[in-house]
Length: 375
Image (tube, rainbow, N blue to C red):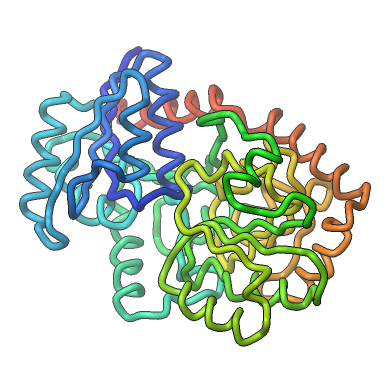
């Protein structure tokens, strides 16, 4: 049965949340649903990576809301109009602002509300550094109690949400799926685009340079590797970057570190790396992990959030968060080309194909919607 589904988000330039929305919207449109994506911005979105990618998704209607940071009433009116115009059967929110500001509009209009919880910065023992960050997450967790369905992307996150009062009957655990947005570039081509040397072993790090992603720990791990030809490739941007660059210069590492900033479609370049390092303190089901699995790139990652649900010691090297020395020890044989590293990468690729396909994932979401509409 075809449904009218309205996704609402306030996208960053690009990241896991944005990738999930694109994949889900495309999968739903392909199975015949009428899909609208309402995306709010503080400035015109032309040239914004998520928006440009959204415009390329077939049969998905894209609605931009260009509003000031605190124009909440105008945003709610625009969302109400979008729901009415789409004759929405389901409103699906993603992220703090839509969960807190926009979801009540759907409830007031009698539209079932669903949210996907992609992760927090203040769970798993990692505390948001600012009062504002803690306040936002407190408001968001309270808002979850009023949704018709709350989707956690990992079993760990599901337990955390139960602990903050989300009703068990409304809670669903559904890890993210992965679908290639575009083919991977070959190793040599990817390195040429990123400006990486041909022969040197390269550790890749992709993400937002914010405290919960722990790029400082990744830098520490790279420093533990000592001298040699190895390079560290930081793909992403954020408020920690200036301090990381200063630290790299102080420690004599600057010449072996590449700072790429935000790279649209960063996953396409995954084969440029000899290893992917995920250093996070907290995660949901990171899309960058699924991209590395698909590309056959060995992974060294912290065992946080939904990551241990996706990979075991058979498919990756799992370490404790914050342990730069353990990350360095795990990276050394991978960068040296140890056979067990390629064996884990192959096992990871097989597991991805077996357990994280898009079609059954989209069907699970449809089952969740159907339950909400019926109730």
